[in-house]
Image (cartoon, rainbow, N blue to C red; front, side, top):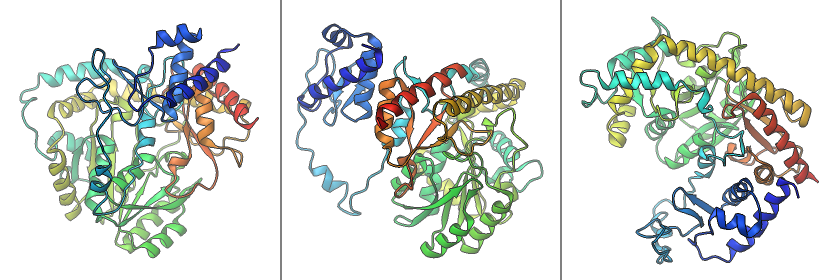
Length: 486
């Protein structure tokens, strides 16, 4: 029996067993499952990963694997030596969480999925964070060491952020002598934190917010968590369709449009020069803000042409609220970013952030200053671009070989590819089958605010250990595709 069929058989066996467990019950240990079913440790970990993807179990590091839904995490719950008690009646929470505004599904599962760490023998073609070998760990360690010794490094920072760091972001985003001044910048807790501040500041609860379709699920989650209603505007190879953007503003009277003009997630589209001007004109005419999520500017590949300027660099009227983060290029733990805005909008952003979190910790800001001032930072970005190019080349070649026709247009930047599946293929079922085959990918459905027009997968090549591993992951994906399509 091959490893792939062993994973499927063990997953089926555990699926039947788990269904008989009370909620919160702990599964047998990996060693016990290996002995009972006569399988390898890798087979056990991959089968558990399949059940976790299906929502049947949850893994608690240091405690074990548990039947989902009722693990309460209270004293003694699921802890070795403790007792797993059934929870009390939690049905009152349905009323408490929906009494005023109706039920609200935050749809956070896709966000959790992008942060899920796969078992060691599963190829990660899912995560948006580069592999650890691509991160500047020595630069970061040195920057943290120097930052900790700076005078006042552990004192409370200004609520808007360190003036020196705000000035660096202003120049990096708008250019020297550009429209963005130091006073237009607010330091945020990474990109996701900046998105949350922007959505809670710029739109009233219940209001519509225009989003690209498809778009990053984290944007949809933030919009819904703020009590807002996402309205999709389709994207093609040249970015958001501005004819439909104008129609959407007219139909909804929305006051916010969230977009990713550079290497859009998940399509990789770059907003064309003609549409850049149209986006700003349409938004200004509608009296609306454009939230520009510039998440991938530091992930440009070595073969990319000159990048277009941020929309914010061409905006003199305060239409664009720009978001930039260093997290993906530096480390998932360096959660430092910046929002830029002017006028009352900036005052609103500042007020929201100070209520939510007071400020971004000063040691992180000091370390960021040390990092970007180090000559090694520019060298790291060049090396990262070269490595991403190699992984992208391997992914594209493997897809043409293994799944011809799945890959449409792609751009030389970012970290992902958007695969079009044949009509009728269930992207969720394919994702689960891929885990059984030993590769973790992302289904396309969560990237749409409404019904998806066709099945897709998003494939990320940044988190893989090497170009060879990217190619191996695509091969495993083909095996899963054959299993699902028969």
